[in-house]
Length: 464
Image 1: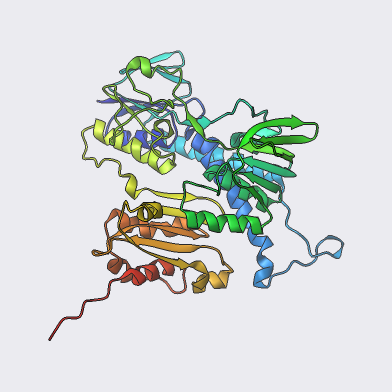
Image 2: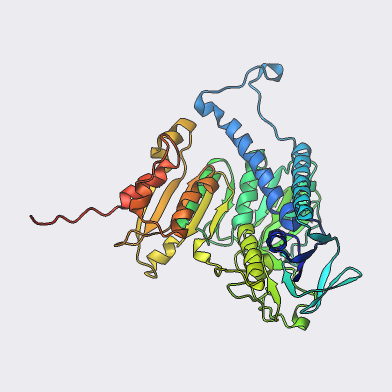
């Protein structure tokens, strides 16, 4: 029986473990925090739970536009929804623990051993888990990553925070300054603005989320400004300091921003230092990320890696697929290499931003020849009914064959809507095939089939 030891119990680790157990391997997962790892306990699951609460509150705030009003509030006023942050955070933590428990139960049911201890690689076939030594035929490293810390902005857990520390706050920040306007910064900034905090978003670039679709980022920034957020573009933070009553963020050009709290979202660093990787022959890049090929192999024989510690794409779905691919390859099963062009991603802002396949900047640069159509969500009948005005559906296809190359959806629950485009990209469907697929009327998904119809090529007339 093949013995597989996995260091790390996040999506890259526990999904690999489940596949390995189902294929008959003897599996041990070494995880110091608990099943699910940081993704479930401190990162993805907690943050999206918080965001779900903020989206619900924003819907209450916007209810008046649909003809709904509060009545019977205290002292005869209309009443205003208020976020009870301790209650919100308690629910966030309880849900994360519940999800971890569900994963633990599933692993146990499949016969996977879980060792609660820090893990390190002694050599390519030996793992040290606390005071225990485990021999393995195959090792999978799935140790994840941790928030990057700037020397001039050391978190104190009270006023200067990483996102993992936000769930310990006992009251809503009066004025939250978010440093970093990437995906994490944009998500938390929007959530806390909807929950009731004043928010200043400090971006070092000329727009939010510079690595995402430009049209999508523009829509979101417009929504944020309309909701009262202060978005400071081209403003690189130099330092963050405590004051008697809050924080002051000093920018490189000398300007300052003052608030009650500061959230640092300036990237991630891999959890690869001090766990014996390089000593065992595993190559790391300059940033400390594990170098892997498209089937998750490292430079050390029998050692694979998956998830954020590889830096390939920091998405739970990618981590899980890397872990599965590692197991399939190690056990000699049929396997397809990881195809990043088919990865669907989502930004859990309000509205959400989902994308799959090629990016428009590749078309604009001439790298890829493609036709593009973009339909505003405001023209969709269901969107009108629900009061959704911001967003769009964008679809890309090859000019002659009509094969769908990708798309972007900016809408409520875009994470659900993108699946149709993702299937089309994965299966190399054409716009004709998607256009002839029935969509419910009225529905937001109807904009996807409508976009496909807009991209259909007219038949060339033939002579008699």
